[in-house]
Length: 396
Length: 194
Image 1 (cartoon, each protein chain N blue to C red):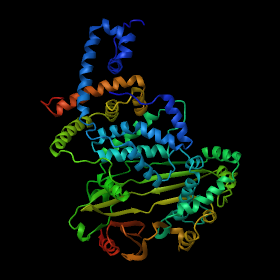
Image 2 (spheres, one colour):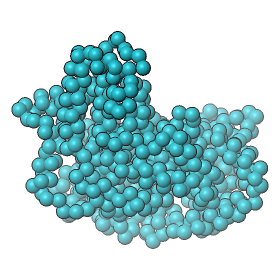
Image 3 (cartoon, chains in turn cyan, brown):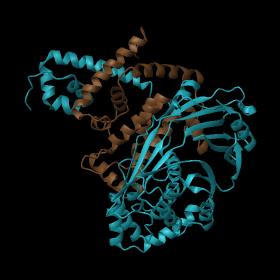
Image 4 (cartoon, one colour):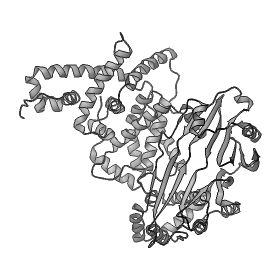
C-alpha cells in the first residue's frame, strides 16, 4: 500500500475507530497516521468523543431482557393474521394475493376488501354527464359479519385456484405486477395530539361539538385531544389487465369500462379534517369523534351498479351476508359498518338525526350524521343508553 | 460493539423469498433482526412496551410490503430506516393514550414483565431522560446514525437506512458524537459523562 500525503478527514478517522484491524494495519490511512502527529491528535479527540457518546447512549440501552423473539413472533403472527395485506404505495396488493401459499385465504380477504370498497363505501349515482361522481355519507347501516366468513369463502377460492393451469397462473402473476397502484398523502403524522379544544375546533373550521354529560365513571376527567389532517388517497386500476385476470379466474368483470376507451380507472377518496376527544378513567376509554363526510370520487365510466352485482355474485359469499347488503335502504348514501356476530344494532335518533346504535359485550357505540358532519361516540364497558346520553348532550 | 448479522447476498435471497410469499423466510428475517430492531427502538423511545409494539409494526410492514427487488437490496437498511422513522414519529407525537386504547382493543399483553427496583429504575430513567434531551437537540439524521451505530448496525446498513453514502457515515457519526457530548455537557453543567 502507498502512503498517503494528504491528511485524513474526520470521517475517515472515525471509521478507523470502528475497523481497526482492517484499516489501521493494512490501509494507506494507517500509513499516513503513523507519520502525521496532527491526524493522530484528531484521532484521539474523535476517540474521546466516541467513547463519551457510547457511555451516554448506553444509558438508553436495554436493562431488561430483550423479549423472547419466539414469543414475539407468535404475537406478530396473531397481529399479522388480523391485518390483511393491504394496498400500499407503489405496490400492487392484488399482485401479492395469488403468490403466497395461503392464496385462497388471502384472495378471500381481497374479495371482502373489494366488497367494502365497492358496496359499503361506494354509493352510486348515474350522473353520466359528470367526469366524476362524488359521494358523501348520509347515514349508517350495520351488517353482521359471520365469524367464519373466511372459512366459508376460502374453499371456493381454493377450488378456483386448483383449476388454473400453470400457464394461467403465470399469466396472473405477471399481470398482477402492473395491475394497480395505491398512493396516499396520509402518513403517521396525519393524526396527532392537539393542545386544546379550541385548537381542535379551529382545525375543524370553527365548529365542534363537545359532550356536556359524561357517564359517572368519566365524570370530571379531561379528554386527550387528537386531530387528523385532511388527506387524499388514490387507487388506479389498469382495466384491461384486471378484466383479463378476472376472466382467467372465472369472475365476471362487470361494471368495468371498455379498456379501449378507458384504459385506466382511478378512484379517489378525500378525507376531511377530523377531531377526537379521548377520555380515560380507571383504565376504560370513551371516544368522541367527528369529521365532515369523506368524499369518494368514482369515474362515471365505471358502472358501479353492475360492479356491485358482480361482486355480490362471487361464489362462496354467505347468502345471509349478501341478503343483508341487498336489504340496505338508500345504499347509495349509506356507509355500511361491519359488526361481529353477537352484537345488537338498532336505529335511533340523536338530535333529530337518524343514528346507528351498536351494543356488544365489549361496549357500545353510536354513529350519526347531521349537516354533512359524521359523529361517533364509543365507550368500552358502556351500555347503549350511556353512549346515547353522551351523544344527546353534545353541543357547540 | 457488534456488527451486522447478514451479508448482502443472504439479504437478497431472503427478500426474493419474501416476494414469493415464503413464510419461513419471513420467520428467518424476524429471528435474525428482531433483537437489533428492538434495541434501536428501545433506545429511541425509552419504553419497552412501546419499543415492542413498534418492532412488531416494523415487521408487519415488511410482511405487507416487502423490500423492492433489485440489485442493491439492503434488507437491514430498510428495517432500520422504518424502525427509526417509526420510533422518532412515536416520540414526536407521543400517542400514548391512543396506543393504550389500541392495546386494549387487541387484548394483548406486553411480553416484557418483571418487577424492577423502583429506586434504581427512577435513577436509570432520569439518566436516560437527560441523554434523550441532549439527543433531541441534534438533527434527526445525526440522531439516527448515532443510535443505529451504538445499536451495533454496520456502516453500510446505516448508509442505506438514512440515505447517505457509506463513506459519509464516519463524517456524520463523528459530528454527531461531538455534538451529543457538547449538548449533554451544556444541559448538565458539571455532570460527568460516566
